[in-house]
Amino acid sequence: MGNKKKEALPADKVPPHSNELEKSLLASMLIDNSVIPNILDFIPKDAEEIFYNEAHRKIFRAILELYEKKVTADTLTVSDLLKSKNELEEAGGISYITGLLDVAPSVSSAESYASMLKEKFLLRKLIETSYDFISEAYSDPQDVQSFFDKVEQGIFSLTQQTYIPNYYTSKQVIEETIEGIEKKFRGETAPYGIPTGFIDLDNYIAGFHPAEFIIIAGRASMGKTSFCLNLVSNIALRQGIPVGVFSLEMSRHEIMLRMLCAEAKVNSINVKKGIISQRDLTALLRAANALSQAPIYINDSSVININEIKAISRRLRKDKNVGIIFIDFIQSITPVRRYDRKDRELGEISGALKALAKELNIPIVALSQLSRRPEERDEDHRPRLSDLRESGTLEQDADLVLFIFREEYYNPCECPEEEPCVCGRRGIAEIIIGKQRSGPGGRIKLLFDRKFTRFENLTLEEDVEEMDTDVPF
Image (tube, rainbow, N blue to C red; front, side):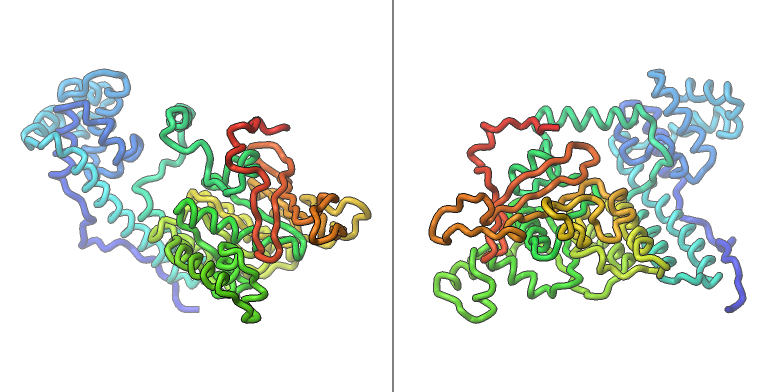
């Protein structure tokens, strides 16, 4: 291990700032208090660090304090307030504050001043953050992958926002929540999260919501991957929402073949065998044209760790504005560090995915295997939360857990193929809501066509308006 040393900020260099811009912004606020709300869209109330000059920070705080008290903020009231706090001299004195108006700013440009100051603040934070990372790199960290993830997350957070307050008051949260409710009431935003495209399921869960970590689980041959890819098509193809897909088991070509066959309603096994009719080819080409234009981004690395998934997800969010990410499947993700127990490794991964969903403010959906316990039960083979393989923290971290269950797998339909099914098992799949953090559990039924690996609604869209949308608890 080499010698460790601490990197200091260079004393001969002055961080990016502009006294003239700071003066112009303060003067604009003093001349016309009505610009303050617009400025606060760029500079949060507790982000006076955006001002490099300490005197300007004190003046900024005084202006906001007066504004919040509904008192006109001008050179006189600001000076009086600072004097009462024994901060007037530190802010430059009365002559300095009144002299701000000599800058003669363009009040209409106040938002531009705030935006430019924000950029200079970001550059200062980037310099500070970078030197912290340089210092840590000199210390020769043992977990290099985790260190790289920390660096990327630090830089990414700077590119995503200007300043994140350490806390939010209940007043702030209430105002934002009520604003969201009123927008939904006025029809300005969708009442759901991202609709799944399955009517009865959306009636229960109201779609997939930002910052949710969602688990879709099922035993082998239940159709987990098919359901996942159907969701991808419903969201990207029919709603135009960009979707990220991590496939750790299937190649990108296998994924797209299944999506093509499901969309075209063509038997995928026949396609693999080369048994393709003219009708099939026409349907496949039509589906290919639609899917080629859908905003779907696939990573098919068979060996990938959680830090790599986080890094790629951040880039997809920033560059492609992905609105949701699917991972098939969570147990295949390589842990960054090895533990003596598999459930601890999985716990670290699920915790990281939950944190990533909050960081990117999008739903992250991970497919999960189940233990063999459903098969070991004598009568009801429906899965339960305890059946999650190495479940540990999966159950705790997930905001929503959906199980896929097909009774037909255990008790095959014996009705003649050419006649209507009377046993109620043929082609029926249950989606069991095993956990919903903000709602009830329950079950809904979907059609499942094995030939096309396609799930479809049992409820018709034209029946939706007649449905009772109150979900039973």
